[in-house]
Image (cartoon, rainbow, N blue to C red):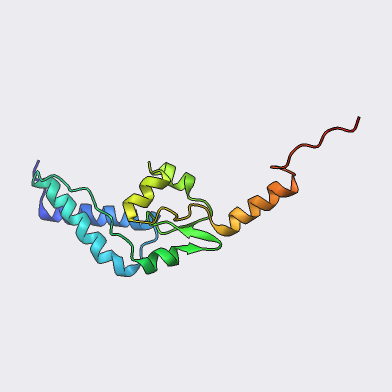
Length: 137
């Protein structure tokens, strides 16, 4: 099926509009998004295989900034999470594969420090992790 150039532009506009309405995309990234969507649509029309998008490896500064006491900024969608386990699972990733995909160190945290401390304090207050005391005879 032949698709006119005008149809390609309309499909590009529709796809980008749908994506932007559901995701936070900085204005500076819109031209690259439009270009990549248009290239993918054009490639489909030419019978070319779309290459799998290879994510950019974050810089050490970006890695440091992604770790905050209150949350972790995901390199998948740019949102902040207290714990990334469920977020990664929904995208078919394990913590190890996420670290490998973005070139993160093996000790890169998956749970924020504040959330971990809060859960630890809750466990201590409930007496979890302590040996049970023998009942008085």
